[in-house]
Length: 285
Ligand code: A2P
Image 1 (cartoon, rainbow, N blue to C red):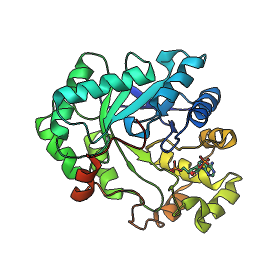
Image 2: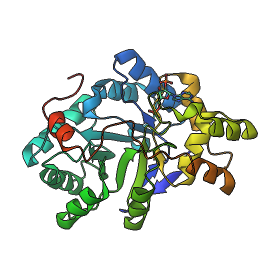
Image 3: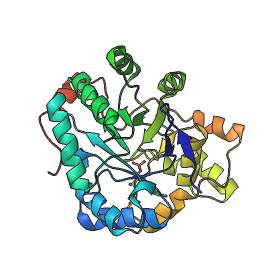
Image 4: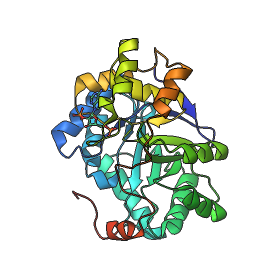
């Protein structure tokens, strides 16, 4: 059974979801979503930028799971800013997914102009078209700036988080604000993969579980939402089985000590990168 965590608006979010970043074709996307739903996942995390919303939507529709049992998240890409443009992009996302509401919609990065986009999200939230609104890759100062004028508080901040980049300060800030910490690349992604870490593997062996399960369990015990990506059925199932064992305090501390402070992904304070990202719409239309 996958637990649900409370959001600051009274709604809840399943603590585990399937991520589909870099899943770039129909077959892999549809299979991953189908296997996740069969395995009991009820939370799928996509984005306009990923270029796979249409296949995510098709897989949801082809499943026998009722729409209202699935928590579907998508994200507004950086090239879209401004009130009307944001509303249009949201409608395009709904159309691609073939849905008439979203469970959650996030501003993907704090690229310039996000304040106007947030106003559009607030209105779509008030109109019931989006059940929950939040942000992604926001640093504390971006959130403070956003909340100066916001009338609706973000429910989550989805940020790069894994044993080698733990976001300890941001985690504490989010907790103090009642904003849920959602981890992207929870396993560490890329070459810097914590799955191969000796300490993690020692803990895994002691519990008779995999390194990936230890890492996901560590996130869960930090009260984070996790959205591991996999296109393999056995891994999708394995990543679900993280609620029947626990890490003790010493094990949590051993993992805490692995933090390097180095990101794998882009830096939300890299203004050059943010501006550059506003000039393209993603790998696929
Ligand atoms: P694959 O899709 O081939 O299974 P993250 O979500 O942290 O970015 O990590 C995703 C990466 O980790 C992907 O390369 C994915 O590959 C791999 N992965 C996902 N789950 C597992 C697992 N249980 N064991 C090993 N690798 C995994």
